[in-house]
Length: 245
Image (cartoon, rainbow, N blue to C red; front, side):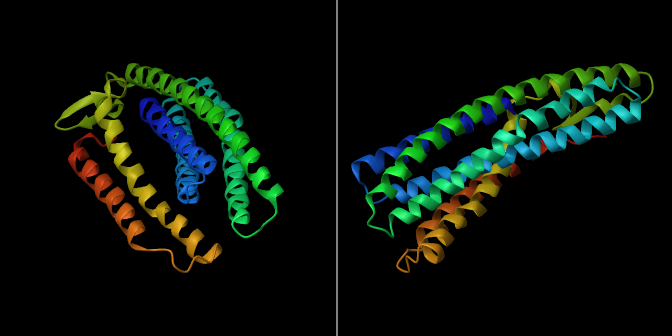
């Protein structure tokens, strides 16, 4: 999961750079690229919430069921205090940035444009810093889960060894052995989620900005491609979807 998040964070950073570049040279597509970058970045931060909420709950239940060391639960709770606030602020700053961007299109005041530009630099810096924090936290969390899986395997080795295994294809496999294929399946789910978020950009243009001439077919095309790509990946790697026994 850390590899997948790191790859996605790099893509998000590239989108940020493109949107700033188009804004500097005055390309009309600057607003579209900026909204795409903001939606993609916000989606990544939401994914982080899902990762730590889900893993924290699973860790707590496993520790309680097997009477393992409560230290594992304490370690996972730390991430909610250290990662969640910056992620929430990053999303808030993105919302402010897109609002200022919309204001630039409806006002002739130069200071609004300067404020939008300065806020964009700050927001991009803060998001990149938060991406790095989230990436490191996901890596540490993965290590905790692998250690927890190993301890659970020791406890249940003579009773129900299957409970500490995942089904990958037709072969049972340890959590620590899951690698690229499981990340590809997760990426397919993320693409499906992103295909829905594409329509937030259209809603922003059409109903908030009042751009009644905004073409709908590019959004249908992008949303359809994202959904289809995610569907193909989920279908192709369905056998690598983690399933507890």
